[in-house]
Length: 81
Image (cartoon, rainbow, N blue to C red; front, side, top):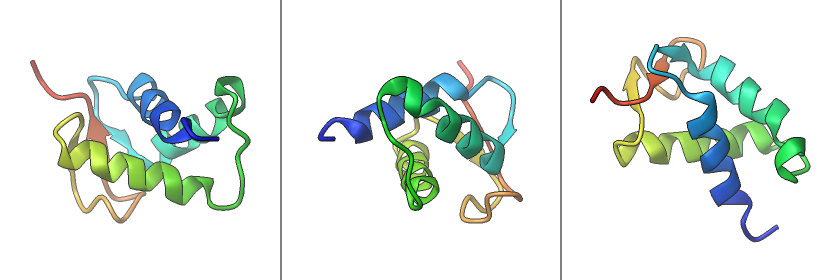
């Protein structure tokens, strides 16, 4: 699916909140929402979601505390206004 990365970005932003959320929990929410967005999850979907999340953090769309490569030890949230 050619627009899957954009859909995954949108799902991440929909799942994020103004409160810090564990990256592992956010990845799980996005994974569960993929079929509703027309994306079939597969074995590497978690990694794809995480890579998209890293890019969103690097671009400032999300804030992160902790080592974002350690999904259970880091949190993300929508940026403060």
